[in-house]
Image (tube, rainbow, N blue to C red; front, side, top):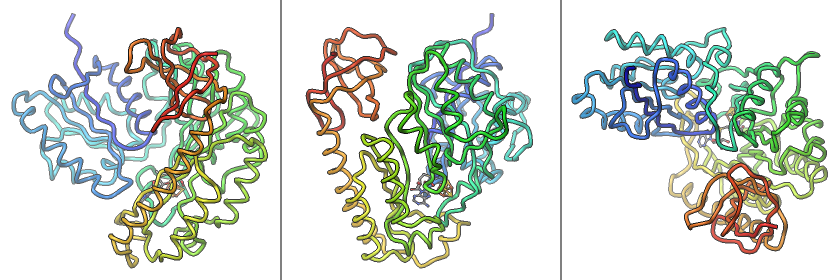
Length: 439
Ligand code: SAM
Ligand code: SF4
């Protein structure tokens, strides 16, 4: 039997890229590839890239430059670029870095086997189309291999919202939802292979409207269907847009037992003037009222968000409105970014904020978010939570898992296996995690 070929995939960016990398790896498994953790012994290197913020493309070029020596030693080594930089730069990547053999956009991953075969003839392969066929159906099924207790599952891709700062509608294309029966089948398969928690993914996951048995299904409808899957213990979803937070989804947070009390709901800014300039089509007030309704349905829900500071024309007063909104919501987690100019997006042409002022605002915002994050985490001490154990900890006998609120929880001398869901009494709160004892 011939030696399997080795594939090294490096993943940048969001959870959707993590999911895509898994599917690409499994698809290339059909070509005789197994994954390796080191580029040095790889027969194929694939960079799955992200284009959401500046310098992403430059980082990819410098990473590619580092493979020059390897390629010289091993002329048969194939190097590919996937993901949103591949989509945005296309052929330019091969022009600037001739050692690249393959460039594949996010909608063409199912064509990887043919593309890989083409590179083996010495030719280059490029595909940045938005084909009609269902990529997910054409991608090779996940093999029967065991999985860890948590998995991502993409249910929706692309975006039609065109926020003025964002490249996603250009790199990932128009919003598309996968049919519900295929998602349920994939979830059942994951559960059979050991998965206990599934996070449904989409750039705008709550805009999901995939075909169901009786017409289009909402995200809440899909969650209720997944709630029936035996062996699946937990359901999460990300990322949501405030305007697509439908009543049935809010209600599900109060009534669906497997849906976890955690919600990532980006707002980007607390200033209505800036939200309008961002083309967000919600106001700070409408967002706050929405959170009130969500908390009425599920009072203990932990909120998470995304923020951009230093968006073009943001004043100190606009920034203060963001700080006020954060003070009111009190996020358990939040991701904040300095605005990054994306060529081709409407905001790129507008007057930019002084970078030092933007840095200073980012620091102030992050300090406030960290303070709330810590307060919410500390308030868990003394409470009983349920932990899904995911791996061994650094200390002997220690096990680590996640609570329903997504906090990391460490338990010492824990007589539990990976994949077990157990009650834990929280005893202490550290910098980024909680400690507890099995109940
Ligand atoms: N669809 C989600 C939403 O509308 O909230 C967000 C998806 S986007 C991939 C993830 C986050 O990246 C955004 O919420 C935003 O905070 C950030 N982001 C997007 N474009 C950015 C830019 N040009 N500069 C800085 N941050 C950006
Ligand atoms: Fe980008 Fe999200 Fe806005 Fe869509 S809704 S354009 S993905 S930030």
